[in-house]
Length: 170
Image 1 (tube, rainbow, N blue to C red):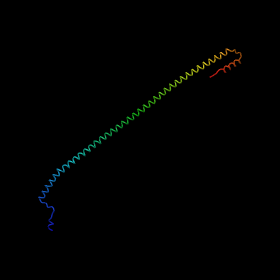
Image 2: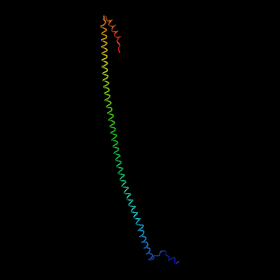
Image 3: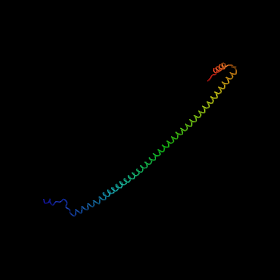
Image 4: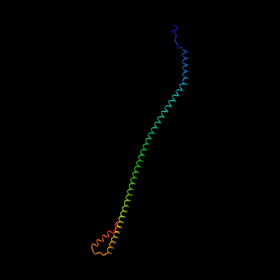
């Protein structure tokens, strides 16, 4: 049992401690050269790539915001241009309508004036025809009266009635 009490799994001896330290330092050097350095480089590269991606995303976001504001500006200009075009079209339409109405009024006035002139001419022609017929009738009556010798009122009345029957008034 005494052997068990004095048993220690690790009994540091100076030779073992030195060899352990040498192996540890050798392991640390190799791990640093072949593991830590590439890992640190990979981490630095990864960090640089991430930062580049973040910077690129910020730059892209700024460009998108600028493009969005440009698009909104262009849309505003397009809306203004559309409203101007619509206003001009309305003005042209109204102008064309008013010109058409004015031309129609002028044409109606011309037609009315021509109709009035025609009516006046026809009236004058009718009056002339009526005067000519009355003159012809008067001449006819006078000719018949001169051909007959009328001595009494009764004969004159009878002659006038006969003339009236003979006249064909149209």
